Every structure is written in C-alpha cells, then in structure tokens.
Figure (cartoon, rainbow, N blue to C red):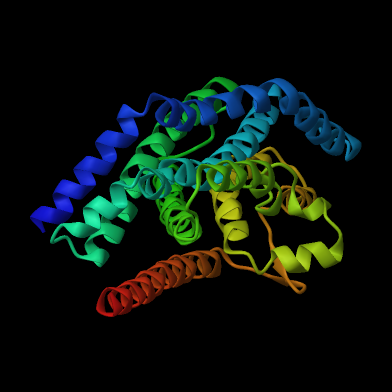
Length: 306
C-alpha cells in the first residue's frame, strides 16, 4: 500500500509539474466553453426560439438562455471527461519513452501496483480538472438562466464522476498500446477531433442518419452525454410545462437535444442509461486489468528465457 501511495503521489506531482500537460488539460474546458458560447450559442438560441415561436408560444429570454447554456455545458463536460483523461494519462506513455517505466519495474514494485497507480493518479487529476470545469459551467448557467435544483447538481456531479471513471479506463487501455511520442500526438489529435462527434456533444445524435444513430446507440459515452443533458435541462423543461408549453413540443425538444435516446426505436430510460454506463466502466477496467496481467506474463517469460 505504501508503494502504491508513493507512486500515485509521484504521478500526480509529475502531471502538475509538467506545465504543458497540466495547462492543456485545465485550459481545454475553458477554451471549449468560450468557443461554444461565442460560436454555437447564437445558433442554438435561434433554433430553440424559432421552433417554439413556430408553435405560437412566446419564449422568455431567460428560458432560452437556460436551455442553450444547459446544452452547451453538458456538451463541454461530456467531452472533457474523456479528452482530459487522455491528456492526464499521457504520463503512462511518457514513462515508456523516457525509460522511467523500465527503472520502476526493476524495483520491487509489482506490475499491477504500477498499473493501478497510473489509473488512480489519472482519475484524481482528471476529476479535479472536470470538477473545476463543472463549477465554471454552473457560473455560466447561473448568468444565462438557472433552473437547477440541488438534486440536479448532485446528479450532474455523479454523471461527471462516472464519465471520468470511463474516460480514465478507456485512456488506460489505449495508452497501454502506445510507446512513442508520435503515437501520443496522433491519438491526442484523433480523440480531440473525433470524440465530441461520436458522443453527440458537437452535434446532436438526432441530426445523424438512422444508420449512424443505430451504430452510435451501442457506444456507452452516448448515454453519458444524455444523462448530463437530462440533468442540465430538467428544470428548463419543467418550467416550459409550468408556462403552458404543449407536451408534444417539449418532447420534440428533448428528442432534438438527445435527452430522449432510442435504441432501435425503443426509448431508453435514465435508469438504463446509468446501468449501461456503470457496466461499461466495469468492463473497461476489467479489460485494463487483463491487458496488464497478460503483459506481466509475457514479461515473466522473457525474464526466464534470458
């Protein structure tokens, strides 16, 4: 246990000591929020306003602001929980590149202890950055239109924790296979550019073709994004109902922003979304464990041969 604690502290210190890695992880959510607020907020605002006014309803600015800020904030958190995990977990690969991992394996530290230290250190660092991002999102929502209650905030924090657990496990699996600086750069670019699309953060899944929607419905991160959307916008939809908005319009908006997800035509309940996400976290962690066990056996065979 002492060895594990020392390794976790070492990994966390190296992460925060590397200014490039740390500031990239910390600034990424803030940059995304600025970009979303600058370029996408007007687009979403016009879309919501036109859709509601077409139905003959008058829309208060605060309600529109709460709807837009909730969607943008949920998109930001959905992306950051995974992309930041990949940035935080790059130390695993850098240790291979610099030879630090080889030095660590010479010590009495067990292989599984080293693997666990990378996971827990990445989990801590990513969770810290994402919680800071969540606070910034709450400030943004408070300025635009606050309709959240305490339960919504707590559920949102739970969603962030689950997505960070999944993102950390996923990054650990991928980074186990990397061994060079070029591979780090390539994977970072691919994740940063593509993840937001496949999880429905940059563009609602409802806007994709039917075939692509069915494919994406098998991805666990899709349900993580939907959970964030549901909890960010629950109060907004409730206020719409209180102001007399037709239920058909409210449900249509939920469909358009992926609060309602459908698996081959069947609506997925929130409880099932949590089940899918939790099972996915457990499966990803199990795969990471299996990879490290197999890697440890191969290493032992090599040692015996030599």
